[in-house]
Image (tube, rainbow, N blue to C red; front, side):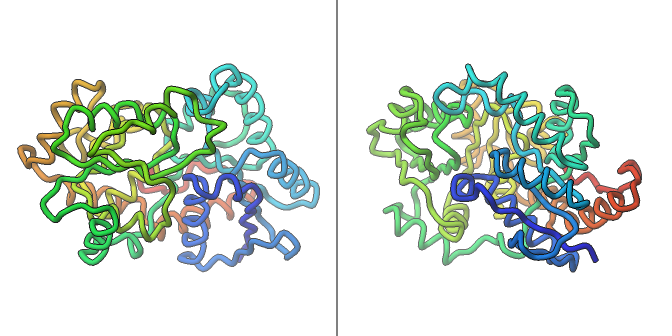
Length: 346
């Protein structure tokens, strides 16, 4: 069995993001498949997983290749989802594209969460096999809890009858935070709470202003632990994810696994996977959200949580582990990835 190094360089910066969560999922996937792994680069290993595009990750990739090891580079980032994020991100988007191409080309294979992000990367001239494979979800861990729901509502002073709308993500425009604030303004009868954080020096002024919006039904408590977030999923009536661009969106997988109703923006990454009115509800514009959000909360639309849960089961950690084992075998056999059965792990 091939031993894997889960390289955790850069996690002090990325650990509170979806990249940090993806790395946790990789560890569980490897455990489920019985694949040994380590976080210590000093140990012996045959495969290295890289999850960030910081300079130390590129250095680790080049070092591993020189030592005859195999490199699996996870492409969590694209130029498209870098835009509209931090101060100066739009101006730097072209440079970022060239940098991540350099990083991803250093791997033997590139794994990215969805066919959509794979199509984007194929236009970058990476010249490596690009495999779409979901970040996955640990269904054994993400389970709805009545006790967790009570803890959440008590912690944030919500009564048992108040309707709570949950948002999760960095304080960046791309995540749809402006629409989230406007929905809170539009519907004072509902409670809105957004968990996440971003260093203030990176937050554009209008997003900083939005986060400071003073509304009695709107809260931005900051970053919370995974356990506290699971309580929030359990105790919320709707997960509202108005993001403009994603390579997948781990928090949405979590909400689906926790059987929290989901309202998401209708963007290309979810085409062919999330069907409006079948597994989740999707809207393109703010006007769509204005209609769908109260209709979901007042149960004027069908509850789709069971359908969403059945869909997200296709992204279970055990299936991800099996797919990773097949990728490793192909790497060492110098084969291709065309015959791997991913079972729509996208």
